[in-house]
Image (cartoon, rainbow, N blue to C red; front, side, top):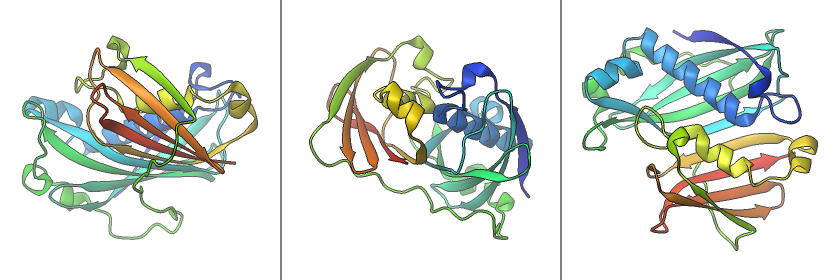
Length: 243
């Protein structure tokens, strides 16, 4: 069974082009995942009450077009598979004409809130009972991929993690990494180019009061980022494919 949720686009959720920003598309996708999980009985409120938390491992988003402010979009979501460690959840994004304008795929795991270690999804939830086995012909994108960061830095910035970066799981919110990466782009790039595909790999938690270095390289139509903590460890890798 799938779930579908509507989202109205306020001006504050658009970028300089007056279209919904990629980081807010990502936020809507994560909101849809959370609401669908809650409807099935394994949402964040239930998980936190039992000392557990959902964490995102990988996200991939492909957009054909970006909706404008004041429009309403619909996001359809379903669980594709579930193993003891990971679960894949997919999404279709529709405009107000019910046309598919984007797709997304996410890879999830679950951690013990105190130990921060992964737990067995098959033993902890009944998620496997909610897997949709029928293929949706409208969903055509590849699963989230491993992002490789190789080469010399084109740009390096540092972000100090502040209170507004931290979410309910007491680590940096998933979309903040993307926001920091996009903030290295110029206004001209935002206005005159389009991000066709996003891939994010989350590797380790970034925490309050840390300094995160944002490394970037440009290769043809791709911009790759590696966000590192003070020990030089990669917290997140991001790849943007531009048009």
